[in-house]
Image (cartoon, rainbow, N blue to C red):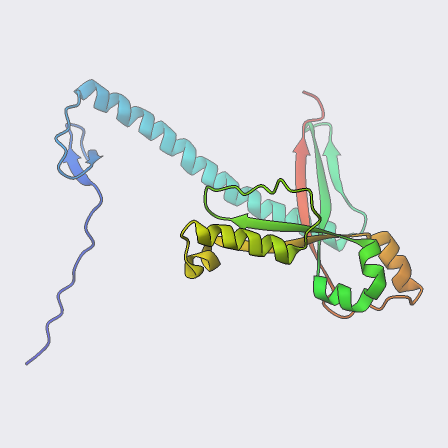
Length: 214
């Protein structure tokens, strides 16, 4: 016997309600009997057309702008020191600025810098709990990140949150701020040798346009 597969169409979220306007239908929630005036439909249709026209124009312009932006960045990247241009006739000044995002590997820095780590690196413990509960420690004590984590975990467990849910809602990380000038000096002097991966950087480009005269 041949197997017959029946295609099941997904259930529509809204129902279509015909109007007196040709080809125009209202979208309504299933089971709702809509009581709406003809003039309201006309006005609603008019403003919807205007909104949609502008939205599609903006989408098209954004695509064009994105393409032009990429071309601008390519020219700037190929010519060291070039940072834009200005035009008095067109009344604009365009500025292209590179922005470097540096990411440090905490463990590799600790291993390679040794005792110098604590002098050149500031650590900020960030604990995020993804539930509407805020825990504030009022005790004036210097505590390690491990104690902070254990204290918050214990408090959440006491509230009835399971270990499985705890792993899903609680996130902990240490943000570090490095004295790059001093570290670079130590690297150049041979006092510190940074292993591969200790520092990674990513360059992004900001393209800004302003009017010369307002």
